[in-house]
Amino acid sequence: MSYNKSAQSLLNKLIRSNLVNTTNQVEVLQKDPSSPLYSVRSFEELHLKPQLLRGVYGMGFNRPSKIQETALPMMLAEPAQNLIAQSQSGTGKTAAFVLAMLSHVDPNLNHPQCLCVSPTYELALQTGKVIEQMGKHYPEVKLVYAIRGNKLPRGMKLEEQIVIGTPGTMLDWCSKFRFIDPKKIKVFVLDEADVMIATQGHQDQSIRIQRMLPKNCQMLLFSATFEESVWSFAQRIVPEPNIIKLKREEETLDTIKQYYVLCNSKEEKFQALCNIYGGITIAQAMIFCHTRKTAGWLAGELSREGHQVALLSGEMQVEQRAAVIERFRDGKEKVLVTTNVCARGIDVEQVSVVINFDLPVDREGNPDNETYLHRIGRTGRFGKRGLAINMVDSKMSMNILNRIQDHFSK
Ligand SMILES: Nc1ncnc2c1ncn2[C@@H]1O[C@H](COP(=O)(O)OP(=O)(O)OP(=O)(O)O)[C@@H](O)[C@H]1O
Image (cartoon, rainbow, N blue to C red; front, top):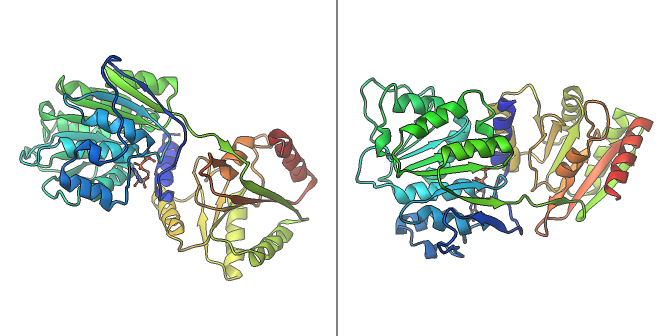
């Protein structure tokens, strides 16, 4: 379960190349409601160090994202303020806390000052990459990974200002090995709290790290979702927090053209698919199948027809899946074939054509409306127009399609 959650989160990060736009307003709950609430419309207003402003613009950011507008002034304020922030993946949380960490470190002090914990090694590396990009013009600030494979000699004291890693190793480095002096930490970031608590032990380890930090250390916690269990964990980690929440944009089927194609067999569906493919110039398409076997077969047939196809399948390791997704995102393959299960929870916003080679159904064989919507739907008025094609090959699948139609009244 936790493996799935962190894999999903990683794959989502990899498949997305852009900020997720949202028209929803942020909800803010201040620790001290009488203090003024600042929000910024530009990065200049934040009075960042010039090296960091260059780093931000160098990444192609023109203005703060919705959540950054409110979160950044809070995180950069003096004295430090604690923050719990929740918004869906892709809305700019990572970029925000990376900027906060880079702003708060003193490059002249050669000891760790910021700790950032992530649920997995791969997720930690992704955050590390953002630190490197944003800190590109600030080479005095150094970064080290507290992850299992990284073995340091006993008695060593770290000189890097930022440490990013997984809770277990981070805890060992702070207590058992004392590579880090927790009393000198100024900023503590806990990323992906919802994924974190899904792993046995991570919650306790995170709390034990937090207890070693000084009272005036800034505590920041981020999460994509906010169910009760995340919330109670957040409150144990972050005392006297400001709270920012950004609602997830509703997905709609309004801007999507949906079709279905009637066939008699798997082979006919494949033929129909080839015909459709010949008829329209498709930028990039994702094709969903019910089983691994069908997905493998279809990918084989498509490549025999000369298509460049990527296959994402459940038996692959996360790294392999990540590599497939990265190649697809970079346009190296135009078609991605995957199974319903494997792609659950993955956002495919930039894909304009979605083909359900098999319709999404749940374990009992009933229509899975939620998956249908998530796969095909687009959010808000920024949503690009899209095309969805459903393949029907039996009375049973026609029945499922009809029930999906009834459900959405479309
Ligand atoms: N102000 C901005 N302007 C333009 N792009 C931005 C801005 N902030 C972040 N981005 C880009 O948007 C994407 C999502 O940002 P980021 O990874 O920070 O979001 P997130 O909420 O942390 O999502 P996740 O939890 O999946 O990492 C990244 O590609 C990032 O480079």
